[in-house]
Length: 390
Ligand SMILES: [Zn+2]
Ligand SMILES: [Zn+2]
Image (cartoon, rainbow, N blue to C red; front, side, top):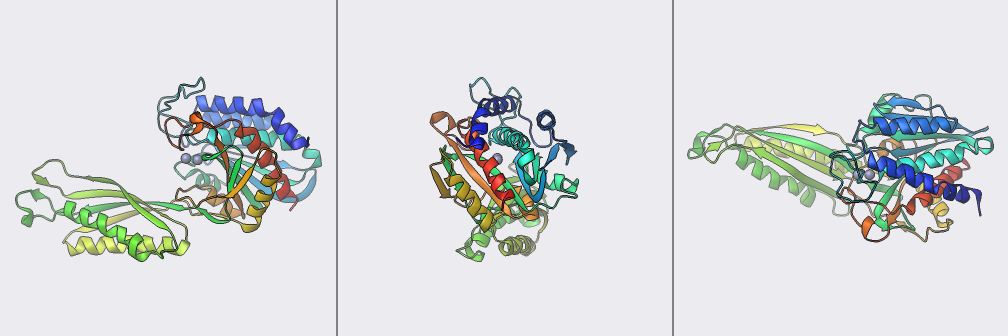
C-alpha cells in the first residue's frame, strides 16, 4: 500500500476522535479560543512553530521542506454555527446554541492529520506548506481578518488549496469545478424613510410601508430583467421591519437582503442599480432611502490547471469512486480571499452514507459520515504533494 494512504488510515481513529471532540465543543465565529488552542498545540507537537491570534483566533504554521521549491497554502475553516444541536449522539454539542452543523470540525481535524503526515516527511519535502486554520467562515469575515493581520506577510504562495466536506454528495464522491464555483455573497440594508401619522389619514403622511412594498417587488426585476439569462444572480429580501400598531403609519421601514452573483461586472452593476432603483422609487413616492452596503466575500473561482490536478489525484485514490463536476453554488465562502492571493482550488468531499448523514448543511441534525475523514486526509495530503511537485 502506498505510504500516504497507510498514514491516513493509521491516523483515522485519531482524526475521528479529534473531530468528535471539536464537535462536542463547538465555538462560533471569532470565539474559537479552545479550538485554536488545540490546533496550535498539535502543530507544535509536530515540530512546527505556529503563529496564533491572527485576525483574532486564526493560526498559521509553515512547514519548510528540506529542499527549496514551491509554496502551497492549505486552508481549513474552524468555526461553528450559532444554532442548537438536535442530535442524540454521544459527541453532540455541549454548548448551548452552538453547533458544528457545517462540518468545519472535520476540516480542522483533517488538516491537522495532513500536517502531521507531511511534518513526518519534512526531510523528503521540496518547498513549503503553509497551514492556515481560519476562524469565522460562517460570517465570511475570518479570511479578511487574518489577511489584515498579516497572516501572509512574507509568504508568497504559488497555489491555495482547501476542501469542504459535503452531505450533498455520498462518501466516495469528490466534486470539483473549474472557474466560478461559489457565489459572491453581499449583504445590504435599506432604511426607507417617510413621514408618520394616523392610519386613517395617509394623505397627511408619507407611508414608508407602501414604499417598501414597491421596493421589494421592483428589486426582483434586477434579476428578472437586468441579469443576462445565461449568467446567474439571486437577490433575496430576508428581513422587513417597521411599524408598531394598526392605526399608526410609521416613520421608517428597514429592509435587509443579500445579493449573490458569480460575475464581477454583474455584481458591481447590481450594487449600483439596487441603490439607484431604491432611491428613485422612494423619492418618486415622496420618501427617501439610505442604502448600507456590506461587501461579502467575492466569488470562489478555481484555477483550471489546479482543478485538473485535484481531479487527477482524486481519481487515483482507492475508495474515491466518482469524481464529478460540482454544481455552481449560490452560497459564498471566504476561501475566495485565499484564492485571490494564489490560484488554486476549493473542492467538495462527499460525506453522506445513510440516514444520520443525510441532513443538509446548517440543519440542527447535521452530521457527517466519518468514513469520509481518512479519505479526505489522504486526498488533501496527495493534492498538496502534487502541487509541491508542479
Ligand atoms: Zn456553513
Ligand atoms: Zn462550511
